[in-house]
Length: 585
Image (cartoon, rainbow, N blue to C red; front, side, top):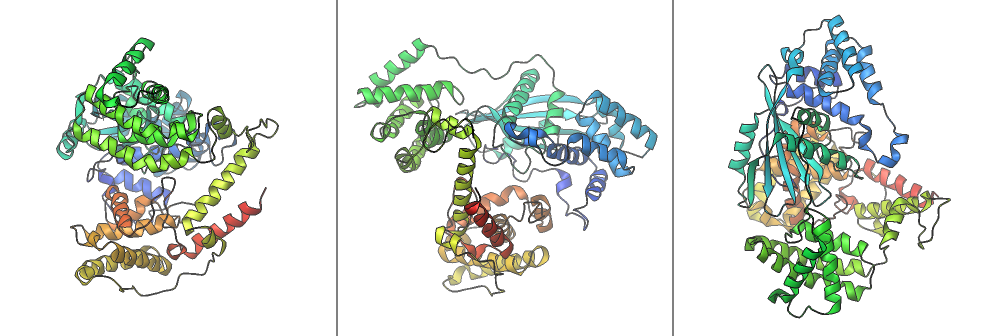
């Protein structure tokens, strides 16, 4: 389990192993399937996802007075109004997961009056108990996986894994729940994890409760929110499970570095061999900034540096926080390399982790040097601009605080559209003619990989025929052909054809907004269930294949950077958005 992919491959809820029934898009059909599961998690997870949709924490705190869509009260009220087994089951699950006392009493009265036959565990769920808490962490402390277990009085057990990211403010970045006892989940992660720098330890359940709930609350105030396939849809369920833990714990404690301790650390560093040639005033001044970041941000330990911390400090923190000219800021990467070597030596960090961290400095230095020479806001102006109270020249603009924010949003959106189609010329000349029904282009594809490519092609064609349409088939064929021509080694390595085909179709679907409900109307869960593959491994496989094909990777969005891979509906939407935002004030 890692910060980038918390769910262990192959370890998923039992109720996700079956293909959906033909009426899977119908909410009541989903409830019936959950009721048919041999484990309560199916129904509880489904109820959790519904509650997450109406949770006001899903939007920016500044926008919550303008929420659109049904409220929790309206959603739950609709289940009171429709009397059938499925709505009774949803009310029962919602009653388990929380709500105020008035709502719970009303649910109890309603269920008693209706008398629908519900699973036995529902009647005793109020007696659920926690089974413990375990923490899995990494030596460099970028974050922790906190695992908590719960048991119902009817003996069913399930476990939650909550990833708390310290670099981004000690917030929950991902979480998921599995229908397994905590001891089994811990044993599984120990068997599957091969990282020698990962460790497991029991954590006081009361401490785990405070840490998880505080990280959930902090994450709920972070915008844009962190979203994965399982978070925050499982947030109500995770909060209920965490609430079963005892009270009275202690939260995360940030180490406090006194001025004296900081001066002593500064003296040791500049007296060491690692700082040779870096003792001038500029480097000493810059070191104070690195120390500020290390002590007061992230995990709060300036002697533990990781690749994510390097990325944050070079690509965001220094360019935004430190107001100085480029020649001065340009000295930071070399100083950071020296400090990483010194810090890891003091902490006895293994050499391979130091090499990875130094490699991150090398990787991000070019982008850092470009950023510090770009036209950007710095210091307080960066914060004020984000709040929308500065105009482009940096002047106060209190009477119209939204103008700068709207202008920035429009500029950013148009840039996203340019990346989606491959540049300004492609955006200006975009059309929405349907992609033709064209055969696969075998030109330039090596003979030795043709059998493997053909196997993947057949599966891609089948998926597009069964789930999508001719345009998606053409786009997927084009992506596959490009990867086969530009990165043939990707097909010489061992790898399952069904996973590669699913990754190809998923990538094309994602760039075409297939999984946005109001556009494509297909959920990723149902998509992967129809394909019969595990969702957890697909994004990583897609990334490997797209890299082999020379497709661009951008930190802000997911794109194939050409209209050749976009279906007509997606291009029409881009055109409409382009025209609206270029002409709209």
